[in-house]
Length: 418
Figure (tube, helix red, strand yellow):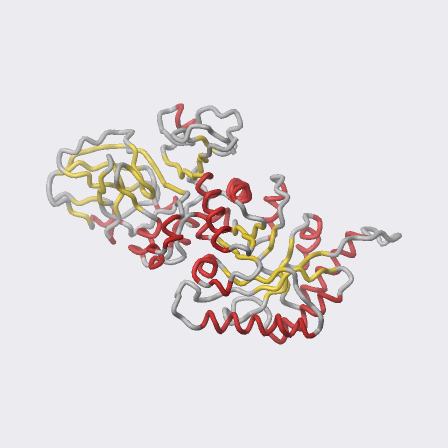
């Protein structure tokens, strides 16, 4: 990752020399040979982390950087989040945790789902913190610690216990142990010589639906497990339940730690939350940009793209943009009214988005030229298009939009931090 001092200067990840990317060399304007790039503002990530930590305090902030940092880049995002005030990181896969460790990140890293038995030795070696919700998970974690302490079965040497977090299924029904079983498992972990019960947690199913009483029911089930452990003299150091929506809108869910994902990236957990004061203060970190690759003028009545489903209402300038559904732009974005920004104005996507390109109806006599910047997500002039706008048009959520940007799209990182 390159740190740049000028906020208008965008550099590709991994360009340690700080020079121009190959796209700039060939006039593309982005960090690759094709003039398409996703720009990630790491200062926005750090700012969002600080805002969330302040909002949820005194609970500590765990920055969720799974799925390659929700498409933003796990390693640079993790560093920015820690700089901004996060104390923990969370990922979905052991491989994701290993990537962070390989990058030299030393913060606590929680694996949100129970690792498989073959993965446990890597968990122990990399000092990752596994979630546990089965007896098999306890056995595998304990065995991995023992093998680390005695790699050849000869002699003995002490090895610190492995901190684990037991997950309670309070009603999401994805993963986790039912409350009675979670109580038994947490007690077993607490008494295990190779393990340490560091945390107890659950996940909220409808925290983004603020008026739904189910969140309170889940929290009550979780607190019952905490109380049951206390009867046995067991007190986990970290209790956590809140995702982004829980941290923002359910103060009772904040407990000792909050796990913020989508809000870390400057996006609301739901479209309806955009008017919330804290959400309004978040800074979207990602923009998706390209440059016009071809321009032509077509007469009114001309039909364009696959299926010829878009008919020009009048003679108009059509711009080709070299980005398509293989990059994460929904194929039907044009059919549902999707727009892009060109010259600071909204312009409709014309017809079907193809695998590698899309067309834009720039209107009659538009002064659009090859090389002009096109903003698909982000701001240009006085206009802005958000990931939630795409999501609402295509009947999905902003999470899927940003996670869906493919690895064909280079990420360029912007920050003033050196």
